[in-house]
Image (cartoon, rainbow over all chains, first blue to last red; front, side, top):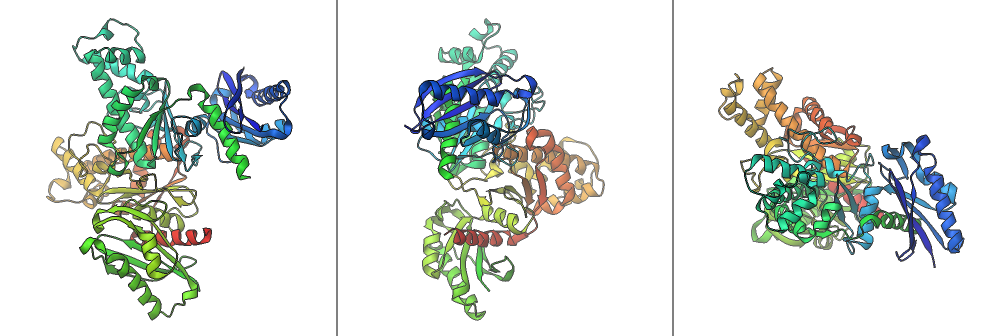
Length: 316
Length: 316
């Protein structure tokens, strides 16, 4: 059976999964990301870990399709990474270096784009060719897939939608230093910020007032339990999410939007809330864009990275 | 010499240009757009006009490359137009119908995308492969070119950026019925609206107070002549333009943004004003995106339509 690997490089750990050609996970594990000394050990560590797995599993060299890698930084179409703060990397030719270490085809992409490709292949976007992944986690990220392939952009930053300005009147700064970014309203921390702001400026009774350090989940749970303040807070959040996602869809007009990240665990109520305002703010032909929840969780990046390698090796 | 045609179908006139393979205009003219009876005459009129031109100019059938057509509505990758309000069209297979009438290869695209492709080929975006055209006219439109090809989108609406919501607090409605669209701040009518709003809420002396029905150009002229109110108004406008264009660039990350439409006649001061706020609001790697003014004017659509046909016939 032919096989390959999907690698998702994070600032703390590297997730590695071995896939069959059809996209089944045959094995997955993590190794620590050693970012000391300019992160020079990261690629050799990955190569050694893959070689060791192949050896212990008795996988045959002639069945080895290749390796796909997702990295947390801007990546160009040639597999060169242009600076990964989390990894202490400057410009690194990941494709070339890893291909030399493993003597196999290597494809490289941005981690958010890889997650998007993974969700398109085996997750919430299955069956589509044009998709936007919107990741609502601690921050907000995204990836764009057009005609089955990730869009990198001229500076490797396509799909970096979390810092789109959706409110020019915002007075509080975003983590990025800008004001009014989508992340300030639509991330898990954004939901908490919106909730605190609401509670300060309204007298409405709420279970949230008792909880000193509540989380995004507390707000969703309170709303589901019928708390009026929490419901109003989420309605405001959904409005910002709907405006934000309609901006992205007016621009690239995908078939489907897949919502991932921790906030997406809220599931159907979240989708319904977003769609209410999306359909109000999206341009007419875009109004009936599909919506789905991401389903691959932390494995999405590895799925997408392997799919990139699979497509890359098919093309050459 | 090989030749072909670029056709730009508008609600009032159809612009037709005959091009050499290298992209020189050999002749151009207009015919009226007859939208009566569901716009059934439009394609036969175009075909007859092209055949007549070929005959009178003695152009040889064997040198005929094909025809590209830009239409004012959503167009799919197969050249089918899905509703053109201006033309009284429902779903029309323009590619098939015109190819039958002229017995030649036909390629079809949305008119804004065709203008973008034209500017990429022979205009402000020459030498680039990834570009966003932002048209600041009576309304705001746009077109996206990725890897040298126009992005249609799943509903033929990619690049319809004029109705991105950039101000969730707007109280006045846009023409589209929505509130806070880019068009309300960045179009020629938007500039006038912003100016009137400013004059109502400020006491600043201004030459604009004398002019009852001033235009966008009046505001730009007044600012250039040193009118303080006009300068403040344009600074507000530039801020909205910078936020708007940074949203689009954070999403698709082009090499260059080309600004077209009537407002773009303001030239360098406009570009400088936009860049000031663009670099403040765009995500870091996107900050050094290039900017240029469109140069093909009303011919952009015909240039792009012919280029689409040229590329289409090369591929097949």
